[in-house]
Image (cartoon, rainbow, N blue to C red; front, side, top):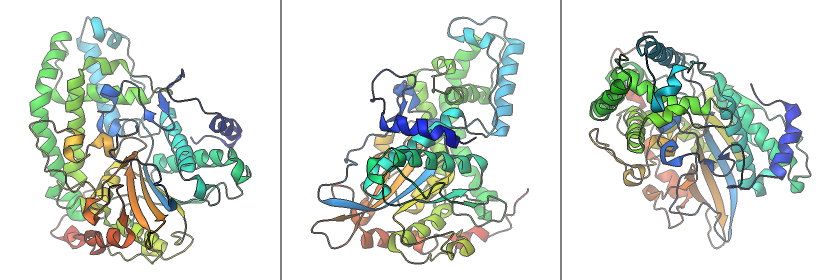
Length: 471
């Protein structure tokens, strides 16, 4: 459920009177820094980490003498319950433990009374607030534009994604109401949201599904194979320790991973993001191993480790080019020509854009754009941390409520506008287009560097062979 309009007055007061970061408060998830509870482990939960501000070697401040002229956010939905299939599996693991274990002691004592109450697929209250916070942060970051312009908003059709878009707009709106320069008015609200369905066969640049070879061919197994090899390395000692501490449990490898998953999922099920007791069952080193387990899934599923991974992000990449250059979309991959040719559903010439999607799709989009192209191939026998992987990990790129900012700026003494990309507050160096020391390329150089996307990125390979959906 989205936050009701009657709550916006109180939310606007909160925006106008923010609690300083670091002061006493009921939650350590903040608007500007994201999730900071036990960051030695919570920043290593892969795509199940709540959004947090990633360290950046380059300042994300607007450089002196420059003015932001365009700001596109691409966001993942907020924290959610497990998917339906996983919630069933997790519940089964808990029932198995309760049926077979007679004594629970020490850090395992809480399991005796633990009841599995997680739902399936829906945003949690915590996840809703993440997107409200994101809308506030975006408004305040780009206040020179946001106090004069309304965002053009699109969402992929999954309910949790649409709801996340709504929550984000509520945060943006509340921040505008709190801003004296905007006149504390926002006649454009509620902002229209263009929703692109996720039904089978639908062209949707915010959700993969059209590429038959990728969805149903051999490429579909690359990520699971990489994870399986790494699982054989790191899970065995964890499983042995748990089975020794819980006699009779007879936990499998899958059960062991499930218990690790229950740490982030129970944490984001708490309205304030209280760290779950499940998290204490594992060491800091084991959480780094787990985070890498999830990173392998993204890298070999939707990034450079999969031959057709980046191809899934080509459609959005070409839409981004269209917005940056104010020219019609030129794409023959996943874009919807009906929507993209209609100014009501794909407006050009706007200053503010907001799109809402999923972690897998964002991973593919980053790869189609050539971001993190200095990463990999990632080994499946040892951990490679994000700083050593060109800034790449699932937690650093696509946590819950992840957000990428694509900025254009006009600077004194510079004839052409400059482009900058910021992912979860980390400014990317953009070496692929000759990025300067502040991570900026000229607009022409940035677009020229996107040859993969502009040539439809191997889309013709999506229909080679007889790989059709089994659904």
